[in-house]
Image (cartoon, rainbow, N blue to C red):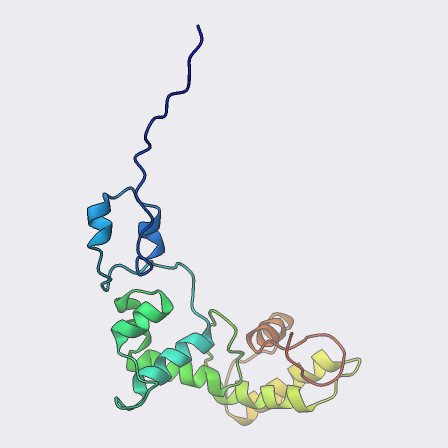
Length: 189
């Protein structure tokens, strides 16, 4: 039995207008629905993934800018800009979270990280970071950093602080510094 291919019309939706979000482009909605599409707060796609510290600081900066400033953005606009929900942006803008973000940035933590444990002692972190950046690295550099960290902790009156090998590796990762021998405390490229 020989069948001839008869043209079967495919029920594909026409290409949507340029303002339609990517999720509607692949839909099989009727053309009338696509033609009447109006972008709204829930029409933007949700992008999973964590924001970096730099992006979170940018959200804070834009929300704290004066309303007449060109950098100012409302929480809804920020949610659309970063592809996050309005509630996620609101959590970032909570005063306690803003304070924590600013402390992390002030202690020298890299803005490229996506998450970081809260620094219990920001002054200790800041002073050790400055020491690491200004000190040339030698054969016993890791031991020198750990010794200096314990000295500063004692000076600041921090009890129970132990600058172990694991603490050292977490510190280097938190600040995006190179951990081996080399010159200065250069950031990773």
